[in-house]
Length: 336
Image (cartoon, rainbow, N blue to C red; front, side, top):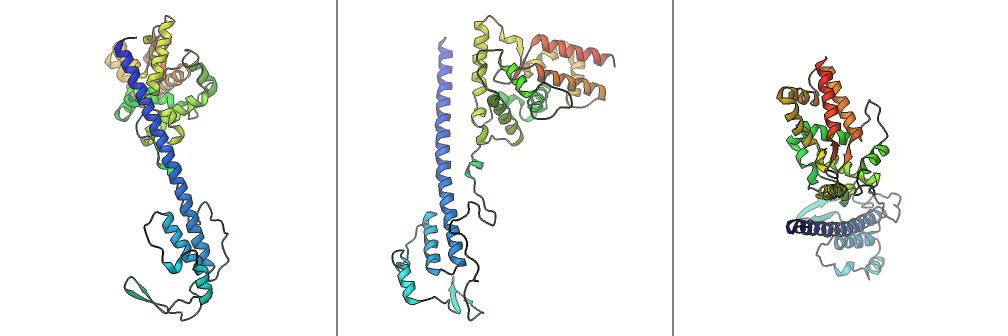
């Protein structure tokens, strides 16, 4: 291994370690925030219970408990100290709110003159619900999303998704999620077929590959990846796996350059068929042109989905498969 290769490997290892540390800190922060949310919701539930049952000492006490749980810096009044609040209120009897209550410098008038300050309703359960009745639901993990895209999809994002290569790439990705009107092999069979070409991928499971596809489609849709697919969407995961596959190929005397990515297919076709014919291919890939041409291109996309191999950084196809599919398309298009 050359010095440059060793340095590249060290940088990638440091990057993976940094990402692992970052994910650990994220998980710890999420656990801490979840615990705080649970504590706050429990406190609010107790406040509701105390208010609805006219237990004023408990109400005051739980309000201060909630403030303390929320991290608000305050001094608990001595008359409401938790050690003696019950005895003080018990000695003085039920508390009746005055007709005039000072609120923020202004006077609020109690027009009822008598009767309880709170309506008497059945008591709530002593245990606060996990979800409050008015629909507040705090899920901190919902907001902890990976914002960096996997490196292997960068060429196919933004304007890249509208190129010929981008349309081929995302067509294959989306084929596994949509129900195509044409008959296909089942997803598990196709995934296993796409993994067995290299020792580096033979031990990868079908669920992991599906997660990598979901992560990339999710990033394309909304620009981030949810925690559910975060591990399958690590920035350099696809590139590292591709390097391992290419190394395995060379060790067995196979030339990895004979397996083409979507970008390589576009470059090859531009040279092989010329600008005019490639323009027709682009138009059909965009869903434009005559229905027969579009139908021919849809069949090519289905065939690409059936014949791809997983190279970590996306699907690839043997050059002979690519040439056969697109030369057949050109021949059939010419006969229309």
